[in-house]
Length: 218
Image (cartoon, rainbow, N blue to C red; front, side):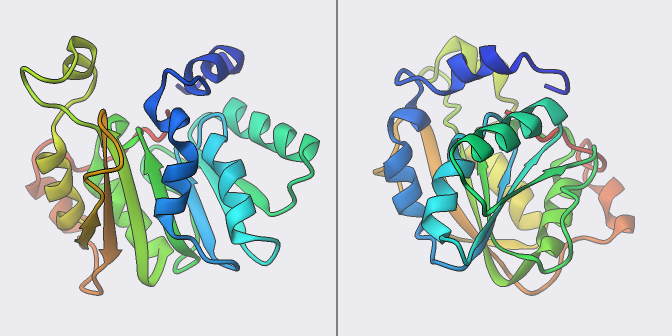
C-alpha cells in the first residue's frame, strides 16, 4: 500500500460490487456530519469518501485525507482540483502516528482500513489525541465470522469485530452506537473520545503484539 497502482485501486474500490461504494451515500448520511466540522478520513485511499465528506461539511468545514501512500494523496489532490473542491487537505501519516495536530478534528472516519493496522493501540492513541473532546470515531470494517464470511475475508482480516472493539476501547474510546441494519459485509460502529485519555507510552508493551506502528491505507 505504500506504493500503490492508483488506477488499479480506483477500479477496485470505486465499483458497485464493493458494498461500501454501492452504499456510499447511505454511509455518509449515517455519519451525521454537520456543516463546519473537521473530519479526518483515515486511510483515505482513492478519496471516495473524502470528496463526499467535503460536500457534507461545506465550505466552512474541512476534510483531512490521511494515508501512508503519497500516491493516493496526490490522486486526491488532483481529483479535488478537477472537481473544484477547496476544503480538502492531505496528510501523509507515519508508521506510528496519524500525524494530526492535537484536538484538531471533530470526527475520524476509518473505512475498511482498521484491519491493516499492525499496531492498533498506538495508532488509535495518536488519533485520540487529535480528536476534540466529545469527538467521534466511525469504524467500518469487514465482518469476520467463521463459517459465514468469505475465505478471502477470513484470510485477509486479522480479527473479528469484538477484538477490534476491545483494542479501540483500550485506546481510550467508548462505544456509542452501532448501525446493524446498514451493511451486510461490513459493520458500522461509532466510538467517542471518552475523556479518560489514551494509553501512555509505558503501557504499550503490556498489550502483546499491539505496541507500535500501524499501516494506514486501503
